[in-house]
Image (tube, rainbow over the protein chains, first blue to last red):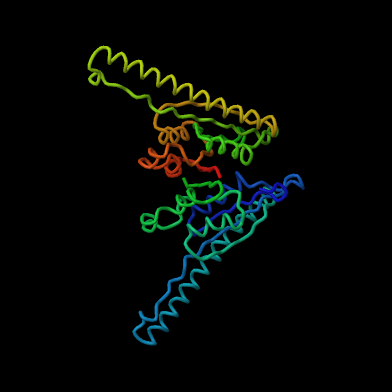
Length: 169
Length: 169
C-alpha cells in the first residue's frame, strides 16, 4: 500500500441487496475520507462482473433462420446483461456519492468485466493492486452456489489481499 | 454499534503467525484511535480458544494406576494448553500496546475460552456484541482442517457480523 495514495478498496457489487449492504458498511466503517496530504482519500474500486454471454455453435442451428435467431437471442441477452450492469454500477456510484456528501470524499473508480465472477474478482485484486476486497456472502443464485460453492468462499481462499465479507442480517 | 462506545472488534488469535499478521493488519488499517468524545477509541477484543481438554473414562483405565496416570496426563495437557494460551495472548497484547504507542490508544480486552474454535468464536461474536470479526485463514492444522473445513470458512458463514479474513502473503 502506498500511503501517499490512500488505500485501494475493491468492492465486488452485483444485483443482490447484500452487495449494496456490503458497500454501505465499507463506506461507513472502513473507507477514510481524505484529510489533506497526510491522509489521502481511499479509492473505492467498484467491480461488477457480467457473466460470459452464451454462445451458439453453427452446428446447433438447423437452418440459416435458426442461426440468425441464435445471434439475435445472444445479442438480446448481452444487451440485457449490459443494462443490468449499468443499473448496478449506477446504484453503487450513487451510494458512494451520498456517503461522500455526508462524510467527506472518497475517490470512486468503476470496472465492469466479463467472465466467471470468482476468477475475475481474484484477478482484479492483483491487476488493480487492491489492499482490501469487500463483498457480500452471496454472489450466485442458490443452485449455482450449491454446485460451484460461493463466490466469497473462493475469494477468501484465493484473493491475494485481505477479504471482508459483509452479510445482510 | 453504539457510536459513543467506539467499535468492538473481535480478533481471534491462535498460535499461528497468520493470526498475528491479521491482528497487525487490523490495528494498522481498521482500528481507530480515539479522538475525544466525537470519536471514541475502538475496543479490540482478543479471543483465544483453547481446545477442550481430553477426558479419560474410568472404563478406559485397566487399573487404579492407569486411572491416576490418565488424570495426571490430562492435568499436564491442560497445563500446557494454559501456558500456550498465556503466551499467545501476551504476544497479542504486546502488539496492541506497541500499536497504541505509535498510533494512539485502542482499548484492549482479553477473553480465553475453551471449546471448539468454530462455534466458540461465533458464539462470542453474539455474546460480546462484536461489530467485526477479524481472523487469519488457518485456524486448525492441515489434517483437522481437511476433515472439518477451516475455522474461517465456518465463521464467514455463521458469524452474525462482518468477517475480515487476513492471510499471510
